[in-house]
Image (cartoon, rainbow, N blue to C red; front, side):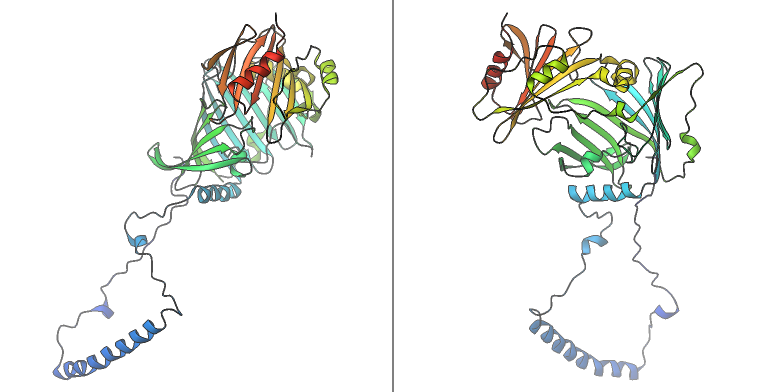
Length: 433
């Protein structure tokens, strides 16, 4: 670990027993011995009387005894998961600036590894340099307090956005070392697995899982927390089918080192094209629409299910076109991990039941059928009206996702229903050939 000794508490309870006032008297005069023998019965009587009074008053006053375990060498009081999260929050609040390298491994992208060099400083300074060894490319995401910059060396394009009081696409106010969704406790529940060694240092292993099965966009996360510094040293993120998706190792971590503001300045590379964006280009607030209006905006025929389980009814639909925002157009085509994803149009249909929901997404990619899927791995093969599909468990609970294609349209259904009901909905959604 880069940080040593932070949070370490050293206890010293022993004192030197030798000295002028602590010498042992080896000889006693007869007079002193006689005095001692005379006083012993009186002291004994006093102790007996005192003992009786304490016994009589035991019910009225409880005597607190010291916890002897704390004086045992290497004794450590066990921490609960909630206590560890509290310590992490306290540590997060104390950080004024930080720098570290994050080594990331992906199981679902063409480029398997990336290295992030991160600088961050309160209240709004940030600079991430992303390097992909396999491609030899570099991307930079920076905020200098006035402007937000995004640069990709492969396309040689710079996106420049003036910062405002409105929410920005990239959050710079929270320390990126921590995953805020986990620490705030609103969306996740936490479990302590125990302790492990990370690079020779003791670390707590915490696991965060979404509280609700319908929290579709939250991932199960494992975090290793250094026992001395209360800072994360490693992350593992699992997809909604409970498979390992991303591994993150935190290296060369430094906090509150006094990073100068000049470190966050961005210089436009020679020959790079600069595109100025507005805060509107970063927003993805989706309007709730009726089916007819959603179909008009999407520009393709929406396939609505003819069958729904009892108690479910249509609530709303949303439409997202990645080309509606200049930010997403450039990001999807040029920047780092998003480069494998072409532009697309997507419609989401939401049906609400008494205690749960059914979510159907229909996606049309500009380059036709998109054969590359995130988190691809074998599930249960299933046939939907003669078309090949796959049924996956989601988050290890009753939630399932059924995916298949209908021509160039990719369709998925996500719901907490059994296989037969999922298939029945799917078959009523896909048009038969």
